[in-house]
Each structure stands twice: as C-alpha cells, then as structure tokens.
Image (cartoon, rainbow over all chains, first blue to last red):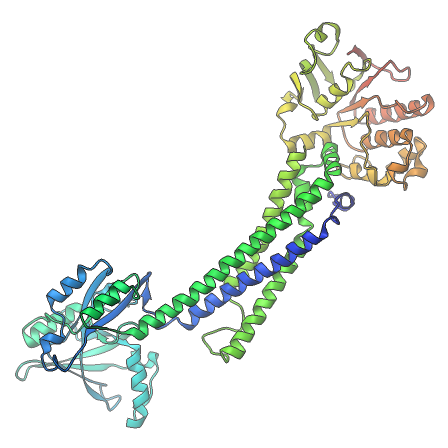
Length: 398
Length: 213
C-alpha cells in the first residue's frame, strides 16, 4: 500500500492569507497570458514578413546606385561605380562589406524556348555569394556547360504576372517558373553568338536582378566583349544598421541613392519584433513576480504548519516525499491557470487571424506549437520552483 | 542490527560525569532481543540520551552507530528511513497532533510503514482502555490517555529498537502494566530490543541489563 497524503493534508494550514495566494494566481495568469500572446504575435510577424526582409544573420543588405542627374546624363562613367568608389566604401567603418553587382558587357537576349511566345533583351549580373539570401545547391557553372543557373528577383515574376495577361501570356507561379527552360543568347562583337539554357534555381527577395554564377559572367564578358566588367551601376553594402545616421549622411553627400522601401520594411519588422520581445520580457517578469508572491504564501503556510511538519519529520516522514506532496497540491491550480491563459491566447490568435488578417493563409488560426511548449515549460518551472522552495524550508525545519 | 555507543557525552556535561555514569563516556553495545533498563534521576540526561539515539540532536561528543554507521552522518532521508523502519520512540513529552483525532494520530504513523493492519489500532486501544477516545481530538484527552496513544503509536511500525522515555509518568500501575505487557509482546514479535529510561526501576519490566546514567 502506498503512502497517502490524505491524513497529512489537514495538518497544512493552507487557508491562511488566501488573499496573497489569489493575488499570485491572478498575477501568474496575467503574466503567462502576456508572455504567450507576445510569443504568438512575434511568430505571427515572422510568418507574415518572412519574405522581403533585407536582414540576414543580423546584417542589413541594401543596394545603392548613383543618382542620375541632368548633369551626369549621358556620361556613363559618372553614373557607374569604379574601383576607387568601391575602395572608398570599403574603408568606411559603418560598412561591414561591399560588393559591386557586376553586369554583362555584351548583349543578352532571353526567350522561353517556344513554350511561351516571349522574347526580351535582358541583363545579367553577378555578386559575391555571401550577399545572397541563400545559395541554392545548383548555383554553379563550369566552362563548357550549356545550362546556366539563374536567380531572379521575385519582384520580376510579380511584374511579369501583372503585365502578362494583357499580352496574352499566362501568369505563372514560382514553381512553374522554375520549371520553364529559358534560352539565353549572348551576342558578341560581329556575328558571334551562343545560346545557353537558363534555369531559374531560386528567387531572391533582396536583390532586384537576374543573377548568374560569377565565373560564368567573367568568362562571358571576356569571351563576348573581350574585357571584364570594371565598373558597376549598383553596389550592395552589408551593414549592421541601414538607418545609421553616419551611413545615411555619407550616402547623401555622395549623392548615392538607397532603396529606402526595403530598409524601412526591414526596420518596421525589427521594431514590431522588438515591441513584442519587450512585452514577452515584461510578461516573464510578471510571471517571476507572481511566483515570488506565491513563494511568500508557501513560506507562510510552512511557517504556520511548522510544528506539524516538524513532528511528521520526527515520526519518520521523508522530507523529499513531504516536499513533493506539499508542492503537488498546487499542480491542478497551476495547470488550470496556464491552460486558461493558453485558451485566451488561442482566442486572441483566432480573433487576430479572422478579424484583423482576414484569414490570410500564411498565418494559422491555431497557436504555434512553440507557444504550447512554452506553456508546458511554465507549468514545469512553477512546479520545480515550488518543490525546491518547500524542500529547502522543510530541510531547515529539521 | 546493533546500536553501539562510544564515549558518548553531551557537550553541555562536564567530563567528570563519565566517572559516575554507566553510560556516559563508556562503550556499549545494544543488540536485538535485549531489554535494557536505564535508571536515571532527574537532570542526568535521560531525554538527551533518547534524543541522541533517535537522531534528533547532535550536541554530543563521541559516536552512536547504528549497524556500524554513525547516525550523526545520516542524511535527512536516511534519518527518515531509520525512524520509519528501525527505531521507534515514546517521547517523554508525547508529541501528538493536538487537533487531530486519536485515530488520525495513530493512522499517520501506521500508514508510514504498516506493520499492522488498520484494525489493529482499535484492538490496541481496547487493550489499553482508550477505544472510546478514538474519535476524539487529542487535545481533549487527558495526559494519561495521551501517553497511551503515544505508546500505541510507537508500536504500529517495524523496529529493531524501541526507545522509552519515562513512558508511564502519568499512568497508574494497572494501566502501566497493561501497556508494558503490550510493548513486550510487540517487541518479541519483531525480535527487537527495548531501551527503557526511567527515574526508577519498575517491577513489571523484565530487563536483561541495567545501567545507571
């Protein structure tokens, strides 16, 4: 027969100071609710703004161009970045790295290999691979290879899908676009021309361009134009903070143009995530305070039941068993509090998804599994802190 | 299962006590099956000795070993097991839960390591004449009744040694003899030993060894 806590229960004076117990329960409920809602909102933002971020590994990646003015119009070299400009940018402490987007020096033409009646002049660019969001495994080229992997800006596909219907062209999804083989014809001096098979291996949210592997473009520039690209019209910069006033001042001074929408978009996401991280920290703080308040209540219960508990220990009751059972008494109420908070978080998520986001597919009506995991961890945390506290107090009684 | 005491002396006693006492400062070995009687006048450290043996106080010099392990070094969990399985006590000051009924007091001890079924509580209470008190709260019982409750409580668990600290101080001879008889029966049932400390010798306790504290 196992040892029962039932005859022991009346020896604990739990009825004392129930006000502080209720305050701690309410505090815990509010804290847990705040914490869970903040985490859920943080995840919502992450899911909604998954694309389009200019941030990767804690850095902003933004493109700059030279502003074409009436004075510089027609003077190509004044509107392009040369080696000296790149060196100057590289020397700035507020920039982590600089990479020019090298462009094709020859003419390029793209057609959809007879699948779509579509033909256009095109440009190709290349950039150092660490400036790419993700490098797809197939993004490689070797001399002699007919297939060229290309990364296309997702904006281009969007533009195509906007004007496509008016030209009787079908709208295509990212998956379909990746499957369409395109022909890339490179024209050199004289009648020199060669056709390659292009395949879209990825879409980039960050770089508005058609990117090919660097060794292909270097080879093609040499082969078709006889020279490598020495100047570039766009430069990508990697910086810790795209809104650094020093950086913005420098860019203004040099009349460099920044893609501001993307920096603002990234900044907005950062701000929102910052707000919800702050709220989550605040929620955690409330949880800690509530647990502390409850610990005062527990201390009081044990102080008032001190004589009985001491006698139980004297009779041979194990302090470990007693601590476990005393703290277990509060398991149901803790589970109830955390699950109520979880239910409210679920209600909030449903309302947010349904009424605010109009059931957008990138969000879920259900709370994220991480939120449920945090809720379970909170139950464990509260039980563990109670157990440790009771055990410590009982050991002191001995 | 043996209790060995070596050069035991409370820290608050002078060394000279060891010269007159049969226990303090001596090396003694108590074994199962023995009936030990310790006669001690007031103030000679009777309750201290019982508390030391029960592991409740450590303010002594020397060593007390149970099964060759110094009980001073027991962890709290080991101490709990020692009290639950190997040693039982009737405190001089009884130590009952005043707001619980007699039966609840006894059940709290019995369920810890049941040596007897629950029905035995009533049987023992009947033998000691307190069966009609089982549902009363302890605080309403007389001191003599409380003493009998404490005695029954000590007999509801398994033990190798039963420590008695003036267990009959509030009982008349008739009730004391009944209680002693019950304790002797229960001790024999476990092939255990009794260490009985009192102010004077008691006729109905057939001790095998006698010490003067």
